[in-house]
Amino acid sequence: MSESKPNGVRAECMNDAPSWQPPSSDELRSLIDSMGLSPREVGAFLGVSRKAVNRWTVGQESIPFADWVLLCRRAGWGFSAY
Image (cartoon, rainbow, N blue to C red; front, side):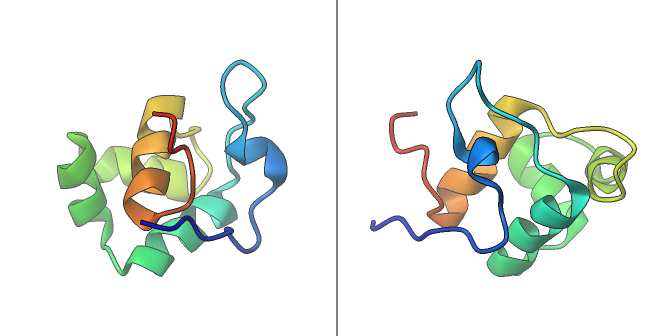
């Protein structure tokens, strides 16, 4: 699968740990929208609650690195080393 470049996502969000910076709620919503998934579907994919996904998408909490990597991989947005 080829990796596409994410539009509107800061380069720091695509770095490996420990230089990774969490995406903003807008950047996360952009990723979720690009996949056409609902918060419930994202939660089911990651094994977290819909409420957790909602907290990330409204900026109450940051998405954990591992969950961001999984979503990016599913969308073809990089992190191929993982």
